[in-house]
Image (cartoon, rainbow, N blue to C red; front, side, top):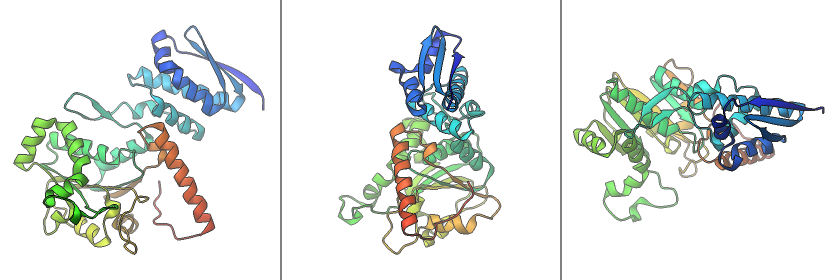
Length: 334
């Protein structure tokens, strides 16, 4: 393939510095992933290599500069994500995804979507009554749902925030753990406590808990109730049974919204028990007001290595499925 060279102007030394990253780590990721050579000339970056790779690298750098111009930070995760999108030809408008503020934490930190999948997920939650967010760890399923719940509460669109999880053992038996029932289930609910405390601040969070405006409880506590004017989040829903999922979904009262999150690759149910999440996504997909958003390794916003780990497991699962064909868990359009 023909060799070529491209020159991209960063316009200012500040933008160049922010693009390069600490010890040029951002540029090093681009050169390694796309197999191009790059070096700086004043405030410009010169790229050389095979024509197709140079074209992708040029697109990535230009989009990263757009992100910087919008006031956002460019880190390793975003560089890797831009490369993934550019390879697919889906990088257009990526800077706009990261500009909309979903919520603001108690310390003033702005919560924004970082990927196309996250943007679609957030928009689905705003538009629908019931949303299933399905995807691997690190895609922000629960965190974004909590952020949107807090935003709805502050806008007086919900009178109460209810967060729940099934207390399913993953290698341990609850009965052998010390303490009363609340003490035993608290570790399962800790991520929800942490997210809400970050959003509201500890003092406000405690006051809202005491008033009953925030409720965090195991899924079993939802039985027999009608939950009205509430923003309700069911986390780790892959560990619900079909019966539990039906029970949960039918708790919804007037003026409420539900978000159900889970990772179907991490089911801790006993053998023979079908996940209520898989079942619900399959049978509810054609109902108005219900939407499923599938997040993938591309939407992982933790360390870039997490994305690579998930890709490796996904590839291994595909290879295994080819050896031993089996029915797919569910089929939802992405």
